[in-house]
Image 1 (tube, rainbow, N blue to C red):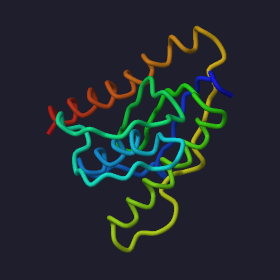
Image 2: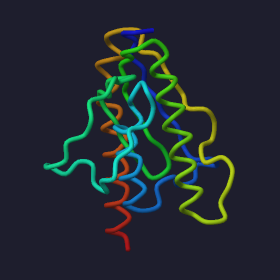
Image 3: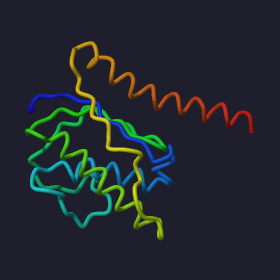
Image 4: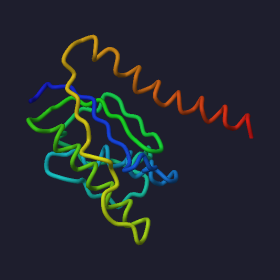
Amino acid sequence: MVGDIAHVCNRGVEKRKIFLDHADYVRFRDNLFLLNNLEGKIRTKHKNIFQANIKLPERDKLVDIFKWSLLPNHFHLLLHETVDGGILEFTKRLGNAYTKYFNTKNEGRSGYLFQNSAKIIKVENNRHFLYLPFYIDLNSAELSAVRSIEFLRS
């Protein structure tokens, strides 16, 4: 329903990595913009859609993206629905498009990339809404701390 806010997350099947290199993160980030359009994916010839001199077409957005975080084996999104069914439609598009990209890029791979359908957790109250941005950020910070410790041990 228009106006709903939801925390969306999903992880790789068997907790496997879904982002193997920088290009994977960039592709998912770009899809956050390109797939967030009522009429379908925005097509562009530009490799880096976020260069300062590129003028991208206007969009009729399905959702507003308040917050996002990409980790090696999962992602988090905090979304605000701008059209009825927008959160579900956007989430499906992201999962399907990224899985197709990942399987094509990693020749010979087929099938599911994500463990299940994405979790779409509706934000029911203000406390939950205020907590989620910190949770999403701290999830990334925790990974950075673990990597730092592993580096120091090696």
